[in-house]
Length: 400
Image 1 (cartoon, one colour):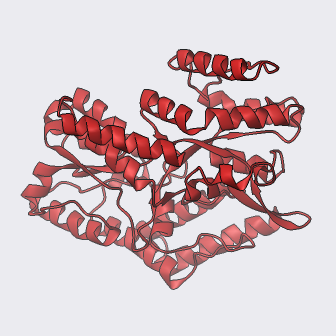
Image 2: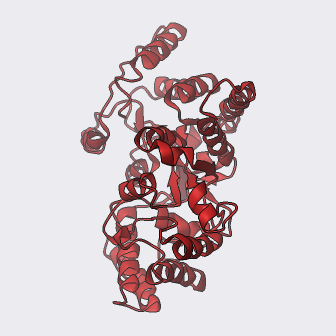
Image 3: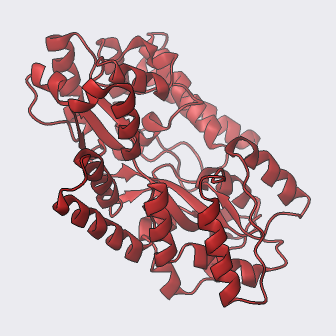
């Protein structure tokens, strides 16, 4: 998915090596733009003409897994192979299906990963009398108040747009709230869930969030940070290059820290995986190829070329070791980027796909965000907002 032309040479060499080791197989690699992937795969799966191996993210793969479109890899891959991948990442590619009998379907082999870190403006925090960046949402609320009081600026920006980032939805999990129960019904209408609703409503109503959080997406957070108007930014390590180019003076004031989390300590990771259609006529070859692409050596090579993170234990260990060696040499003038990459990689040991693969996830997100917005604008009480959100989700489920 959208890896050409930048990685044409990588895949040419990869496929040539696979074909050399497996003379009876021939690999045809086709790259599809991100925007076209979902429609193309839907059409291909429906017409039983899908590729033998497909690169997808868990959200979209799960929506088709619920229709049992993919091979159940739990039944195809031996335990010793599964154990080579980070356990929580492997579990993020599974979904429970109860038709006719309940069973777990593992629909994807983990491939490359990305995870959010916190980039922060040291000077803004210093002006606010803060010596270290917040690590939890509780600390974040305190920092937000101090930054606003001392500098007149905002500590952070998180969008409440249903078609933008999942940060707010992830915060429920990080603060110990389950979104849905085993039957798929709303599980967030609890005292813990109410506390999360209240947390975001309080921040907004106290003026500690920019008003544009209701109308602008994550891109606006980036613009504010680069303009020196935001103290903290949740983003990927590689985005430091963009800050360095667009706002060199802000980059000089920047440092990095782990992703902010809740009392659970959970941190989110984004996963790209490889799935195999159930109707493939070449399942044996497809499995061999998918495991070849995602083995330790090939994941390490791709991670270093693409500046992403590996999901394979051996590759991750070597990736961190390589970073430490490069940092120890002190030859790279941009040590901040290396530091950010190391934090990202080390987070993977405890990171997981926080939002469970779920049918109609987009609708659940829309319902929660819209009710949160109404509470933030005093159009509903917080209790009414969470009750309405739970009822709306359950009504959609029953009508599905």
